[in-house]
Image 1 (tube, rainbow, N blue to C red):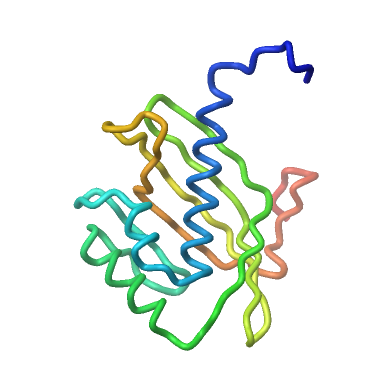
Image 2: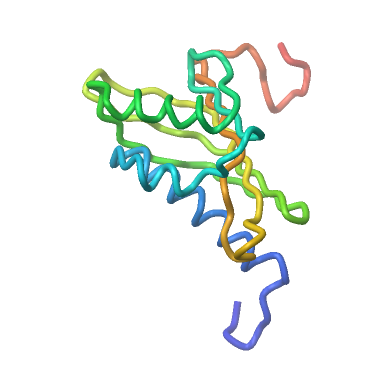
Length: 149
């Protein structure tokens, strides 16, 4: 793209959402509870599903889960790949793969992060939901043939 070309209207928002998504993983990796808190909306609409956990609803439950995780013994490093952004008005979602590295080895988590544009700052996006699900080594689906076998 030349410097003279104008980015489509959605491009600045796409980069803002990707920045919010990156901020989420940096807060997680550094175990920064204040930073993590700043990323999320603080109301009853938020939800979070950590891998292996039941769904948590409302900021009180979600915020407490981050405090518990950050106070735990396991330090995680994230390499986020395959990030895809969709924007629909004031909502956006990112699907990605969290490639986790820890002292115990590694794992891949398929993640969905849903953001809402902050009504006080149109360039800021707040996290409404995070869902992480472990990726199985062999899931029995062949994406090339569409048969599911």
